[in-house]
Length: 326
Image (cartoon, rainbow, N blue to C red; front, side, top):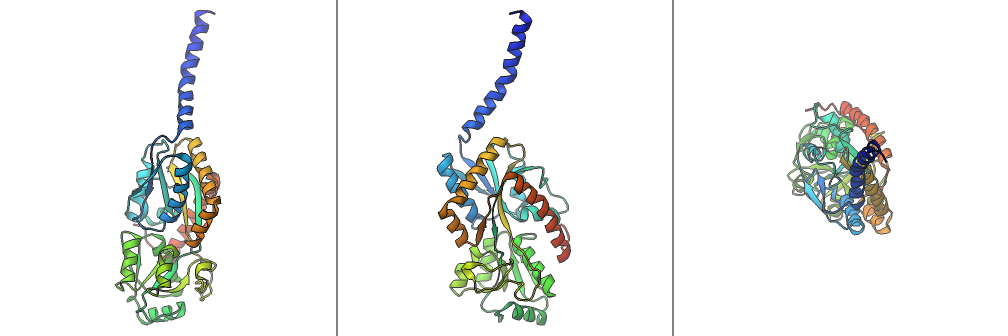
């Protein structure tokens, strides 16, 4: 073999070596705990699907999932942290439909909603949130609530987890379609907002079934309607907003998983496969159903397409409710 041939072989091995090492590194993933960024406060509805799938992955991947709550600005603070995180598969975002709504609520985001993230899977979709009121409010139906709000314009307060959060958008759309004026009181998280409704400091809130149903059953809250297109089996006596006369009202939410863009495709695919396995378990299906969630388990490609479409859909809602971007 000539010196030229030997040099070519050495160069070829030098080029191939990093790729082989990288592949081995991906094959061994994970070798340490995985950080799960939840951009809302502890106790938010996101924890239901997040813990359902990560508990299953803990068992199959052998590494713990450490929840990191980065609250504020309708989820954008935690979301930015993931966009800027290392692309090594050890930082994951689990959030809700605020991810695709925020491009319409903010004039400028500190990240690109589409290009800065690698979609993994849409975990589930909700039946829609429930309009709940404190029992002290003299309204026992959507029609009675609307009539009361028209008699007291701007006086009835509703809580939310912040501007642009699903509870805010659902309530604002409800007010716009009903032709009423409600007073929005934003909080820095679902739990604190919900507690003030329970305490009677705020009259109403559009809340997830996960959060609200136990208190409805205990008589501490009254549910008037559900924002999705169909009734939820667990609370089948509660009508949809459409049934109450708001034709075409359809506000559901979803929960999904993302990595920072540039995360190795092998890791994205592996986590997607684990999510699908988790959702297929009978106990997971029951757990999600008991919390008002419908399993989805889309592929990364399907989820990416859904995200693009939902950004457009959310923009149309923002225009309808007249919300000015911040």
